[in-house]
Amino acid sequence: MIRTTTVLFDLDGTLLDSIQLIIDSYHHSLATHGLPARSDAEWLAGIGTPLRVQFRDWAHDPALFDALVATYREYNISNHDARCCGYPGAVEMVQAIRNRGLRTGLVTSKQRAGAERGLRLLGLDAAMDVLVGADDVVNPKPHPEPLIKAADHLAVDPRSAIYVGDSVHDMESGRAAGMRTAAALWGPFSQSDLTRTQPDYWLETPADLITLLQRETA
Image (cartoon, one colour):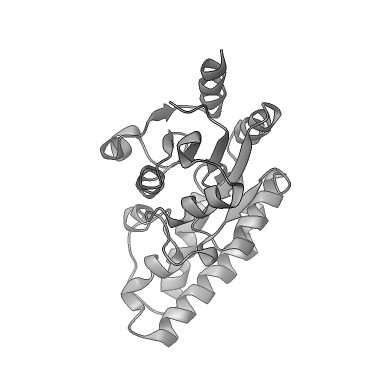
């Protein structure tokens, strides 16, 4: 196995505790436009994919589709800083990895501007060597394009990278890109939710990733 040089992270549900706000933003958007509600579980299943995927059932009506996306973003942004925070140990995890001399990056299905806002809230805006958002790619996760783009930007072999995420879309994207995958179980999904994706590593806490990397270099 090639030694790890790079650790790439998902944002929502992995570094940033923002899942309930995301779900509430979807509910708000449908309600605002008089559309039937969907359950938390239905929205949760699409966490890790872009808004254009989550709202695809209304893509046949471009005006409504654009309005849903705009309403979601307005609500999400206006509540973002008050309702989001880092998962315990997540910021320290990223800092410890950088202190080990490894490259770090963010690969998210959020638009770049939203991702940058999340990183600023965490105090990690200067801690990522690359950021790939939904508006930087043609094919979002679970397609491998976002992760391949990040690896290409850093000029690293995908096999030397670990992708840390919380959803099936993260695990599938990382595996398809030729990276090792690490499932963050402190997010909204359990091990049973992710088992079918066969992650290379299961992380109960952010500290588990540090331990994993320490063992690799021991």
